[in-house]
Length: 100
Length: 175
Length: 180
Image (cartoon, rainbow over all chains, first blue to last red; front, top):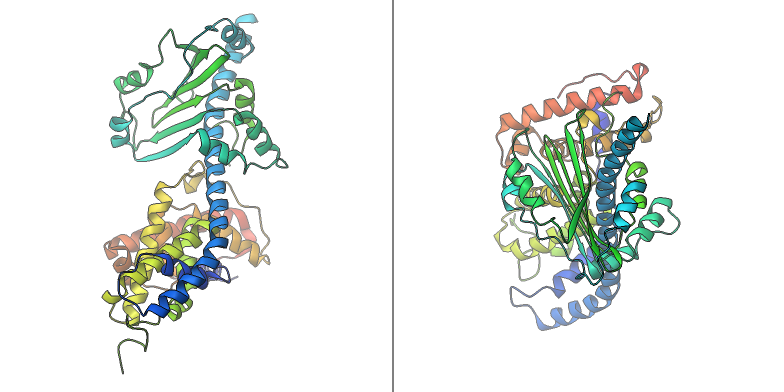
């Protein structure tokens, strides 16, 4: 069996992001405010690519926002529910004691 | 919680103002906390989030039903490095907005096992429960929950008992 | 030999930089955050920042250092501020499913989960050490902390991981301490 360090290197090896990652980065770069002067044709090509990619990316980002908001709801319900459950159980226990 | 349900029914106020988010000031406590969980979901964001809850997942479907008509969910949970970092005065400041006639404390319990206190308050409006507030204190944790809207306490409690890590935030230390 | 590769007017072939480093940036974010969507979003943000700051970067080595530092710091910020599952300390972390000694993929999954349960700074140190193969001095430069802190946190993290993993794998695993 390999030492722990070898197992860690294997477990933590680099992984690739999604296949269109580079294109999405370039699209965001093209859409961001320009900090330096560029060749006009470069900006035009980048803007066209950005328009196409952002349309798809926008939907994906909205889905990502929705999943994050969903996680928040689940976390909030878990926290609130656990506190309420604790109180309920204590009340039930005290009620049981006073009735017995 | 059945007894609490009867109490709730008896506390309906006809014509009461619509429930709103409790105005708590967290600055003092937040400054002392080593870690904070913060959920703030109001109106449209909450409804947006609900769309992503799955009907085929048992727990998510229950949560979807539970939060469907709510106007807001707000949770702040502060963790502290050691006991005594927040004061009784801090806790009292959170109780201050939860007074009659708008709010009623329906449950207050203390657990000597882990030193946790839980206080549950409800706000009544013309339609019944208009809001829920929970103040839960432990030696190294302070949690405040405010739910705006009609919430089913039994369903929420049931979810808290079986959801993910059961009955609270800590995994059983005995292994 | 020129210090910068042939490129656009800005001095760098930005698309090549992205392709060259995207796995590194994404993986640092993913191993620290354990959320693929957030890691991708963060990685994109890092490259966007790189594009905005590329004129300040002097060499390929500088680019790599800059990317590691910015990615790690941002991921740690996100880990601290993001909404999280209820935190449990590593000592109390739920045990991953028990694996057999031949189950390397499962062992890898178990290890990744245990690493993800480490406190943020220790997690970053372990990721930079074993994903990026950086030595403690390099890790200290990336994180901006003393080398002594890196070494002690690394030792403690490994000890915890060994203990936790040995409970999962069991006596028959034969995992040996190894050198750090």
